Length: 577
Image (tube, rainbow, N blue to C red):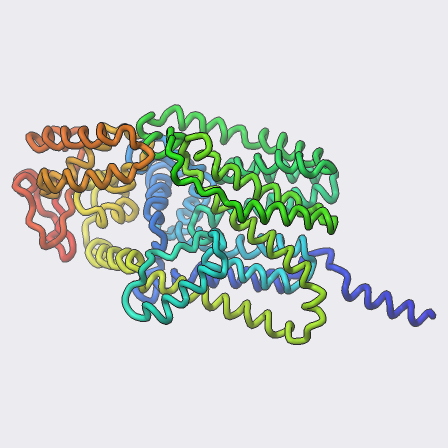
């Protein structure tokens, strides 16, 4: 009898969940995260010879924001178009990386490498801890983490399916040449958002879970401070978590005190950033904020597609939670439901405020929750299946390789990836060589957008025109129109061609549909006025450089009022006399 008791204790100790997360599986997930985050960087290194990677469409824009801190004022960020202008981004994801690269004497482009490094480590670690928290098995959470990090639709609506489609497209349909979709959009690796926001969300979930299980005062404070930190990360992050806490108070009555104190402490911690956000909104131009899409009236309900499947998943998961008494998962369900409601709140209320950002947050929660339920139900079957010991690790490895492969072809075979690399290689060959005189800092550059947006980062310039100009909340519509028009005039555009182009540009701001005719008329009035006298607009906007494609002859005005300081080989750069 005594031997049987000892044996039973030994078996129980073997299958009992560990009190702390195993180190080796978590390090494996971090290694997988780094491999995925740095795949585009290694591809850029092999093809360009530099440790620079501009793998996302918005990377150069985010680097322009970071460049304001890097070159001009270390402790805060500002608008990259208007000196000292208000901006709606939080400083936490910009200023600390800039301080780090300045400390080590690295270039501004190294900020993107810091983002990728932090994303690889933090996403791999926090996602593993989240799965381990609710499964308490060492290697199953690791496999689920690798699957999520490698999946093209982790922040999308078709996990697994979209991955298979893109693989078939790359391997069978479009084996040579460019892919049809550009880029592929691994949103979980879009830095800084949401790649650096999701780890904060996962940490906050872990803090709430710990406080719910052990509602001691110190755990409540940690949970509240984890929520308060979200105010300094991402607007859509803290608003979704705040709504999730309220939903959790409704459906999880036993832990209402935890959710309430988490909310109250978090709001107190986040008040300084909230006040700063309100100040930035007050400093911004009303027209600039509307053009950026900050709570714009949008009475068009034609595109409402309510996610009935996701709501059904929430209902089924909640029923499963109550049946199996897994109440610790109710907070995840609350966050998912809050994200769905907020993601469609704008359409319901007739407002537009880029509420699609919530999808990047609640779609991962949906996948995580479903995977936890599936893994819990399948655990007894998996434990009794001998082939699972090698089949599931093999699947995780192959899925990781597939994710790395798609990230590689996103750089080498998508139209955007190829164009971005070519532009940077050309700029490096012309401007980033020993002996080439730098452009005068804080100057305004007109002309080719591909040149100007890299110059804004590499040489502390400000773009006269381009898609980032429309995103400036400090710029009113008249200032936006004059910049776009002056750039077109200096590039030599004719009136009929400009009218066609500007019709397409204005149409992109579909949420400003009631004033689109006014915007178009304003552009054409500015074109007629600036064409008659470009000198006044050049003085007002302080344009110093014009960059034209090497084979394009300059306009008569540029040839007479500017002098050529670099003839090519890719862009001819003219400086104002």
